Image (cartoon, rainbow, N blue to C red; front, side, top):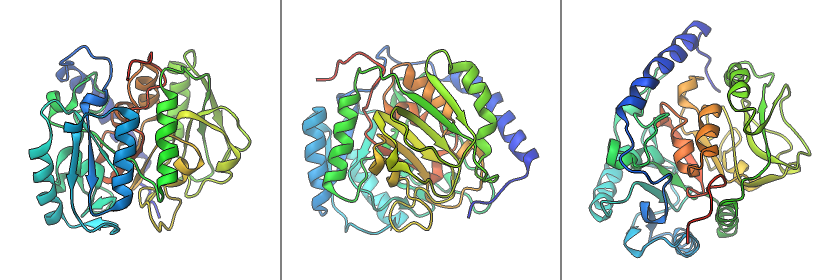
Amino acid sequence: MIRNIPALRCIIIVLQLVSITPLIAKAAQPSRQTPRLGPQDLAVIVNDDDPLSERIGEYYQAMRHIPNANMIHIRFKPGSAVMAPAQFRAIKTRVDARTPPNVQAYALTWAAPYRVGCMSITTAFAMGFHRAYCASGCRPTKYDPYFDSPSHAPYTDFGIRPTMALAGTSFRAVRRLIDRGVASDGTFPRGTGYLLSTSDQARNVRAAMYPEIVSELGKKIRLRIVRANYITGKKDVLFYFTGIKRVRALRSNHFLPGAIADHLTSTGGVLIHSAQMSSLAWLEAGATGSYGTVVEPCNFLDKFPSPGVVMRYYLKGETLIEAYWKSVAMPGQGIFIGEPLATPFSPRSHP
């Protein structure tokens, strides 16, 4: 159950976020002119003790032409929801030693574990395990300097390798996810972004952003503010942002290749056996990327994707992993899932 934080604290957090954004952008001068990450910039981490992970890694390498040097193989017993920090640190040391210096981001090839102690596994791989990215109760965590940044090389500029999980409970599901991402490249889809304002007051905190988002991006993409708990029968879903424990009628909608969708709630990132709707449900319904928190975050705006930020960078032609990571100021408790290199709004250039 997500915990509410007082309205005044929400306002303070938003003001703090606005005030630090120019400083972050100023500090993060892009180190190269490449407009987005490509296959040569992404390393794929495969668990050789997990047959599903191996199949996902092989298929993804073939579909995205990932260099052999960027395929990193590790071993650990699969299936557990949470990995102990000590075990993770040993694995991370081996991964770091095997990662080519040009690599800027990681893709994981499993749905579980999705946590490392009190952190999400994607942030643990991106930044290393550190309790500054955790919180007990309604408290903020450490900020990510990559947030809302113009950087095209997060590891070069910040020492951070954004990480996304190619997550699914079957090879068929992940294969479809990968195929959607590849199919989305350079399509410049004419879809709609649905911004839902729900009856769930604690989880509806992003709705206050919607009018400003429409003002900023409404001429670049069709946006609809919908005052309802869910949409149904829509055939053009490109973005779907909401705040509610469970989202009904997901499969009645058609998600375009490259679509991004998430719901602000406490445990969407608990991918397996969640008491709330797992973020995997978005991918299973046809989305190409999603996000959810793995431990109680409270309803801090900073701990969830900012819809305006993710859409802005995506529409500029950045990859899904770049745009999504840049939209979360405090990602320590949240897992990013999807096809990292999906690039709907940039001309095709990947092999």
